[in-house]
Length: 90
Image (tube, rainbow, N blue to C red; front, side, top):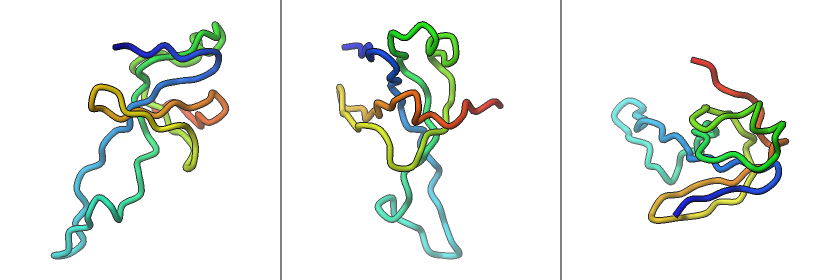
């Protein structure tokens, strides 16, 4: 199943961070902050948005934004255009 967001929405897959270790203590996933960088999976129907953000781009989004959804065992975040802070350039 594919998602096609409407208007100025973007579907993002969070990028997983590596396990954090502090000395001999391993910090569990539940104590970590969720990553705020993700890979664009789908872009909404706004032509202006489609020119600015492309599928496959890495984006930085705000801390408490979007709607989390689970589809076919994978978690995604649907965010509004205004919630995207930057495109990450390698």
